[in-house]
Length: 559
Image (cartoon, rainbow, N blue to C red):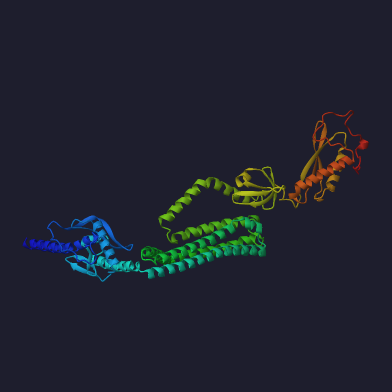
């Protein structure tokens, strides 16, 4: 009991002594705050009352000098809030700077508190309650930081009143701004020049190789992508130049120097963090690289294998040459997906919320659009592996006739004889009836045209005239030979159908038009009336062909 009482008495004595010292510096700060005469001695301190004390206030205020933070005050001293203490210290520091009193900055220790003075003037005190307990720093560490910041702020405040130094900073700023403008101009010109060179190089390469069309290349998104990459790089370089120039200019003037230092510290910390993260990710990136190299090697082998099948150098029972290209694309896609799945855990940041959110978004998009997408993709597989249509085949799909120009994953494109391009979804192609005129074009695929002739004209004569018209038509094959069929016996006429094989199926419309012209000419030459589609009144007399007219010209008698 006696020992505890003596300890409490000693702590109370120490606190009273500290309060007395703090009270000594308060009148000086208050006198400066009230605008007392510069250089006049501070009034004599008043006696310390027993009710005065130091306690945490729950607030904080920062002592600022030349836009630079010097100290953070958190304690209430003798009833004065931290904001009042900070305002008094700032006014005193500004008065000292105006008198060009900037040092020396000294620290005195009095019973657990630290008195900070400039020259012979005590500016403010740091108490144990001014230290942030959460940060874990001690009063001595905080005092060291405050003294360093105060010395720097005083030096910058004195520099701000030096016209020669300000003029030097302004000249350097103008020089840096001019250099930055020049660099921006170089980046802009280099951006346009590099973009043009990329386009010219791509066109030149395609022209020399002959593997593609320049029109198709210009219509694609390859040039847009390359221009976008170059624009992105130039934008990043431009922002870096602007950021660096602004940082340098801000650091040339005392008032804006803290902003420039914070910007520089942010850039350096960001670059260092990225560099450290990149170094730490090297083992994982090496694993990703190994996976990609293995996948690329396997894909290369698959491409060589399927290319040999497509060219007929390798034959396998389960794959046809015309489906080799589609199978190669499918296998390549699946292999790349498998490689991406294997490499995903090794990507830096794969376990972060950003990657998880992106994965959820991609899954949501796929789930919302999967029904129609999967239907079209599966229909494309059916078209490919059923070999119903191939590139450059002349087909009729759902009453759309033309040449197949593309069998894609989602749709099939057809170029009609009129020069139109028709895009048909693969699901529609699968559901519609497809007529392929090119599949057996080597053996001969017939196309038909019909005329109706009255019963009074010998059928042999009509057959001969139709064959003459076919022989006069350019583009009609001689082998297999044209054929004539009596397809119908109607009430008033006979329907004759002429079957011919076009040499080029894609020219069916032109050949058929020429054939019709020749039919009209031949029938006019021999005075035979074409009754298509019908007529209203019969001529007088029987509509029969006498036997002596069965072989009327140009028909020949049967041997």
